[in-house]
Length: 410
Ligand code: PMP
Image (tube, rainbow, N blue to C red; front, side, top):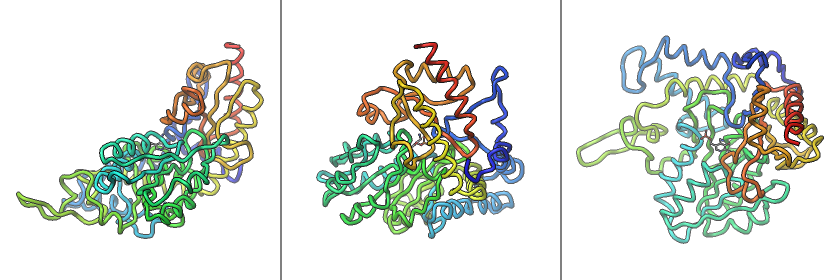
């Protein structure tokens, strides 16, 4: 599909050579975690083999090398998402979930109170939904939800109605991990800013596979995870506008995030270190920057086109089944590279376990969007999700395996 040399790309990912009982792996669970190219694995090895040391504190060679690489990784990731402020606007966290919690605790607990509203969408991931719900309970703020319509779009009239003078924070998912919907986040940012509210964008499913420009969106905060973008686990990032981060209280306290400490009090380090208490994720951060280089060399535009094409092909082929319900935007509309569905004849969990016999990896469950599944009237769905190394042939394998599962259960 598109302009990607997929067979060359596949060579970059050693895990794609795996077979189970002689059957080649078909990995279609990329919205959960993507696979890792050799050069990212090498970046981790190189760190541990040649310059592993703690950062910032040491004056010795290894610490200096590690510090430079770790700090530059921040600049690289800031650049990757269009943040012109560099490292001061880019905090390394454990994952998108921690990025959400950082803002909810450090900003939300201090700034929200009774009468304030946090506006979410009905398609939020639990990472944002549960977090803001709990912070709202603790502060007396109210959570409101922008409706999702039949086609998996946000009801923007409802958004305009909800976002008002009481709104303090709008937290929205950029690309839905369940529906594949690409949300109009720049438009939502305008609505939030017109009411002097902040907007937090959950980019976990956007940054891996399309060009993202946080300044064009005018996001106040933007979060993503390394393990969904060909990077390592254990690392994520939080972008925040510098002026906002400077005024925010720290999240975690401890070493590295301070400048001066007495028995009575402490002052905070400069950005982004104020938000990175303790020994940070050094190897992971450096390897994440390598993943960004890899994706940029291939081209985020081309990756987005490839994923959309695979999603459209999957929808076409899945539509051959007469007992299927496919969620999210209808065929033809641009979407993220994933498709969630349910068959009448086979429960999603049974389907995914049968597909495993064909070495086809998909996900079954609520994909951390339980309230959205409630709204759809189901407890679970099956989800096939694609990345730059997937092919139409693999979707054909998926379809054949689903067909067999239907015969078995039908
Ligand atoms: N938001 C979205 C849209 C996601 O898809 C995910 C991962 N499923 C998350 C947040 C949470 O990411 P992580 O588990 O890396 O914190």
